[in-house]
Length: 266
Image (cartoon, rainbow, N blue to C red):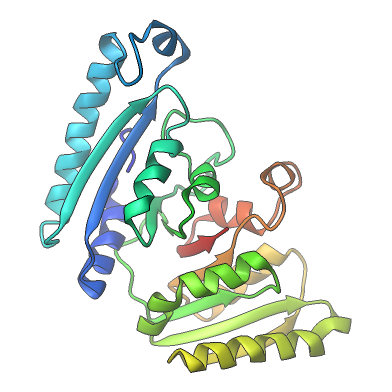
């Protein structure tokens, strides 16, 4: 959870997930100290001055926000921490007790820039768990139609396996691979294999291989809009984060575009 803005969209998605899966919830807030405060710290976890007090005040407000929004959750825990290192590190460590990380993202957010708050792309690399990103304006997670963005990669295979419980709960699932014209037949065979695997796990999916048109992320976004998907499932950072930051990529565009709930795995 963020301490510098509302977490309403995130909490709406978490409330739906907790209700649907009878899930326990751990709320986490963390913030990295400024360099000056880190130098002045007495020891690990014992920073001096106003910065620590300000975080305690903000964390208390965020905890109250979460407890109000998630009043129907039977098992709700709260953990907050100030750290001298990246805020995503203690958040990632708390994922040891979770199946899924849920984080809020803002459209156009500078997801690859350093931040004292928990940074989603860094958390994805550190967490060892899938992340479900809640976009601006989210009012929950309907699970009417899910779009699986398939690519024959480790990350995509991991994402589909991680998303399996949510895909089982979805009314409709569509698996799409975008491929160049000369690879369409191979792509059709690959998505058919994915469909067979999903069927064996109780998920009936429509599997499609389509010719790639333009930028891959924009094409996938157009498909998601066309089928009115309320969830996207995709692998993340098949290339290095540095390459994605410099040249762009599907992961970066999914994070920056932030139009619908997206489950990503690395």
